[in-house]
Image 1 (cartoon, one colour):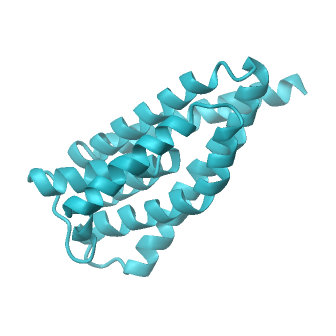
Image 2 (cartoon, helix red, strand yellow; image 1 turned 45 degrees about the vertical axis):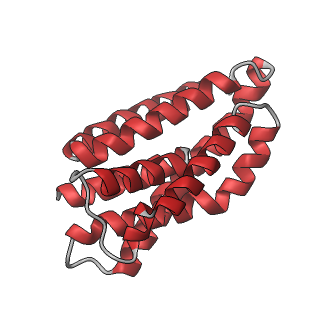
Length: 182
């Protein structure tokens, strides 16, 4: 069960930032015993892959802070974040021996895609209501949540369930507040 929670947590984290969870998982698998990746997912531990992930992470963190450019980035990331979620779900579901790799990738794709869709839907509203001044703050929060969720999914996967429930509650509450205004 904890392996499944970890897989969902990692996939959700990629919906906010594709490269940070990939980098954290690759680095932890390479330099610690916290996570072990089987082939072909062990490719994430290769130094060249880790270096490329660092460069891509720097680019994403930078462009995601700039109003209008962040929207373009979200369009591009519509394909990358779900794919990254699929990779991490499948890579971390190695502990779930009965799960089909295809099913694991589909689950990761759906989870990361759903989180990304919510992010991409909310972000233009942040830009409009704050004249773009809120974008760097919201982006930094998203990056922080992505990193923390990744670490929690690896170290304390059972806590992912609590995080999901809290996020779901906050989202439902926010949607009700928005619908009451209209």
